[in-house]
Image (cartoon, rainbow, N blue to C red):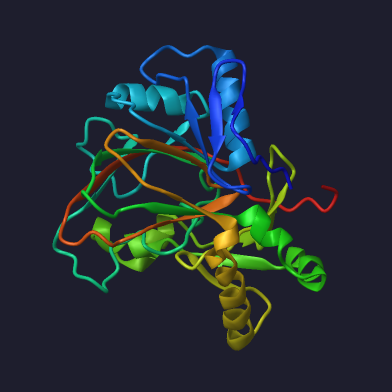
Length: 288
């Protein structure tokens, strides 16, 4: 597992790791500018090395947000995005102060985004628009480290298993039934351990938001194993925590990490804008 313990300077960027395993702040870049291919290559390299990277003080427009994300691939439109929204690629995440302590607000569970798609996202570029004075951090967990922390027997067994993923939690937001949602987005089967298509690293690829069960196991066996695997994300040694400020940006690799939006800011408002890069179909390569 690649690690980075100290601030380093690339050709143009300064990259300061938050932890040994995951997370780094990147400075020396202005996302309003037309960035060269060399700079984009350095950003991609930092993303692959640290799984999630952070930029401060980026007062960008929605057009600039979209333009930056598009340098990394085609962009995804979330199914609950209003059809009359001007920039369909921008997914607005706004937490109203109607939620109450102890209730779920949507993203306060460990998850990888849209694992219910046939080709889940490569990653997301999330920008903070409105932040509470205190709270509202996001935590990230390194699922490569989570895999590497498993026992040898688990590492041998898990690559033989397939899990089912379901996104019908979004059906109600579309005013649809689960059945009609499944017509457009059928249940997906993904390997429990996926191979990262760029680094070759193996990562744990189940999450408590969208994974329903593991095929071939009884309900009891599947529930026990999933609970065990979910708990890997909760180990502090595999995590970093990002304290947002307005115009901070996080860019995470959805193929190698999970995230958790901490809902500790009632009754304040938190508003974010996310642009997501299309990914590829998860697979396991026994040769890597």
